[in-house]
Amino acid sequence: MRIRIIIALALFCLYSGTFAPAMAENEQKLCIKSPFSIFSGKKEKPAENTEETMPEVKNPQTEKIVRPKVVYDPENTLGVVYAENAVEKIEFYIEEEDMQSARETLEQVKNWVYKATEYHTDLYKALNSVNNSEVQANMERELAIKFAVLRDRALFLEAKVLLAEGNKKEAAENLVEVVRSQPGTELGFKAYQALQEIGFTYKIEYEAVN
Image (cartoon, rainbow, N blue to C red; front, side, top):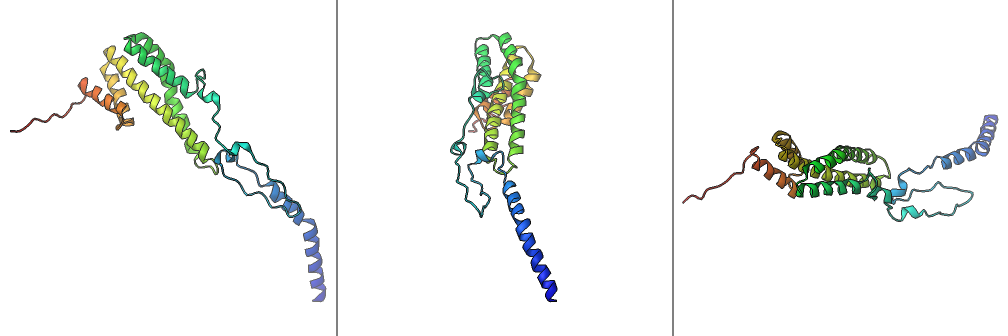
């Protein structure tokens, strides 16, 4: 019995001296930061080191959110500012009754604002389920909303062009989409009012009863 105890103690000492430091080193290596942690503002707990305390290195990127200028560069055809400028240009052409230029500009931007809205929405949903990516996910949500607003404005403006071309059915489709997307906004109200004006729906009027 005494021999078994001695052998067990010897094996325990051998394990502690050989494998325990290696496991501690592996645990330290496995403490990998999330790729989105620089956006979260959350400080992750560093791996414990019993031999030496490592100095804390502050990452300036955790102090504030940095929005790359390229995203808001008016020359960036993928960015929200470029799309916004294009929509404003369409509005100008319609006010000037230049429907051909309005149509040409619409063709350049309409499909992209549709896709960009979907892409940023998908990115928001994907990142929202990842640890330490809340801030980045919310940035994607913000871009998705901005592109969605531009999409609806483009739909409304295209409806005006379609009506000028005498195509009421396609115009009605666009206007319904705008109302469905923004029922409580000024744009949604204008779209519904346009549907009333073209005879797709009607406005309830009350008569005074004496």
